[in-house]
Image (cartoon, rainbow, N blue to C red; front, side, top):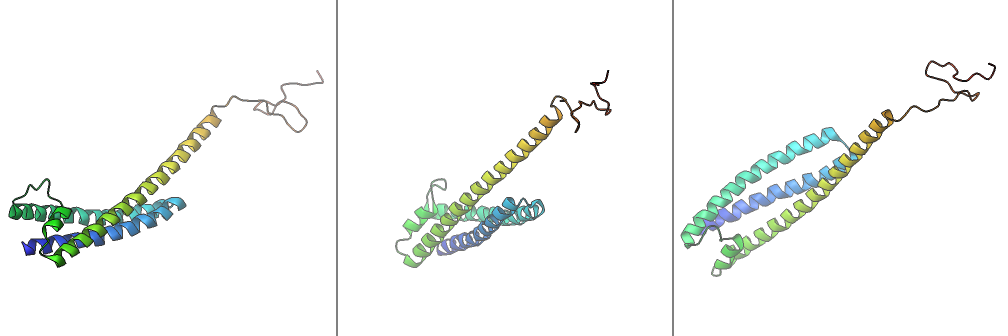
Length: 169
């Protein structure tokens, strides 16, 4: 059981490192979005994806460890949580404290990543709205009716440059 708890703590710490990196990248991405730097945005998304891939592997590992702990404790894997495991470690204060601190840090990081991602999502949506507005504006200009085109001498000219009104005739 002790080795399973150590493996769980190690996995959570590794996830914490990945989420810290992801939070840094997401925060950096905010500036890139504001600057409308598409090339750097693409690079940033690729960097984020590599961290997300590692996080997915760590989540899979964490799930397996949680299943093993549930079997040892004779608990339902679907209702067993890291907090619940921490509460069961009353006799092992060091492991209990380390597990609780790691869980709390990870939870705080997840909240931070979620907040930054929501802000980035809002910035991207605003940028898309502005692009759509500009496209609609440009399309609207091409659909405007042709209006009178007056020269300096106040003659209305057609598109060939000839006067449509001649005061001498």
